[in-house]
Every structure is written in structure tokens, then in C-alpha cells.
Length: 92
Image 1 (tube, rainbow, N blue to C red):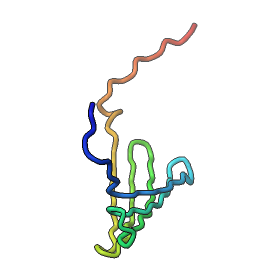
Image 2 (tube, rainbow, N blue to C red; image 1 turned 30 degrees about the vertical axis):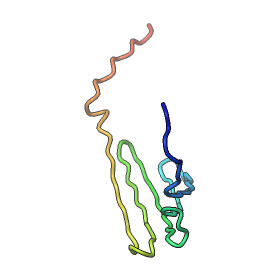
Image 3 (cartoon, one colour; image 1 turned 90 degrees about the horizontal axis):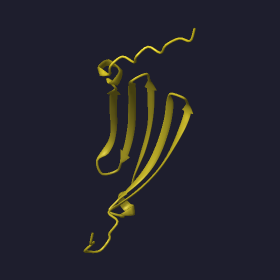
């Protein structure tokens, strides 16, 4: 493999996350697009999961585009489509 061209950093992203309890986490971050510190923006968010359902919310504070709220939900169907586990024999 050969790399041609110069290595350039386009964006700087720094973040920190903390798990409050088993199913709830919070996070915050800082994004500097194209390393232009005059255009930086801050993000904060939280996520909750229960069983196969995860819900995430993020709040993006940008000076150029304004404020945005981003919501997402994910559901894992793995147990619905996976074959049932074989019963384990009980010792006698």
C-alpha cells in the first residue's frame, strides 16, 4: 500500500461520555470544522437503552446554522429472528 499526497486534518472532534446508570449515559463534545476555531460548535446528548430498544437525543449548538435537536431510536430484532436455543439437558 502506498500513500500519496499530504496528510491533512479536516475536522477536530473531542468528546466525553459518562454512564450514569446501567441503561443511561450522557455525553458532550466540541467540533471544530476545518480547524477554524471561529466556527466551533458544542454538542450535548443522552442515550437510554432497555432490552433491544435504544433512544438517543443530541442537542447541537451552532452559531451559523442555529440550534438542532437530533433524535434517534434503534431496535434490535435479533431475538425475534434468531432460532430458539436448544434446551440444556438437566442432570439426573
